[in-house]
Length: 105
View 1 (cartoon, rainbow, N blue to C red):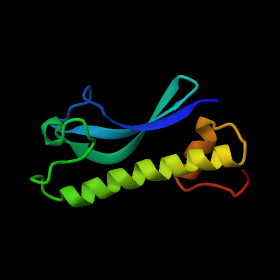
View 2: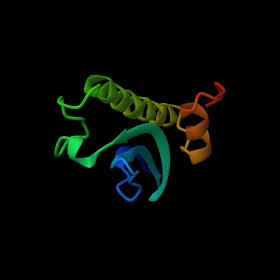
View 3: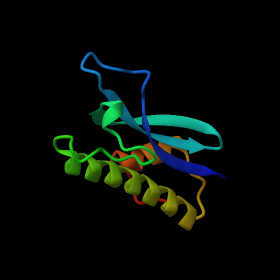
């Protein structure tokens, strides 16, 4: 079972101020689901080839930490699924990622 996570800038959803939401994309067996991170960024403020905010943007360090934290949490959840030899599902991932989880793997 293949599963992966990636940060995506949803350029199709541009707000009036020019920002777009950053979402976490979870893909399991070629099916994707998007989770909002509550972070909004202007496309030009991202570094090329890296999903990091440029240092010239106010609060860039905090935003970059939030982005790294969200991707590492998601990857850790997927790793736990594989450790316990349990196939990942969108429902189980969402319960754990959003903090509404039980310890039953």
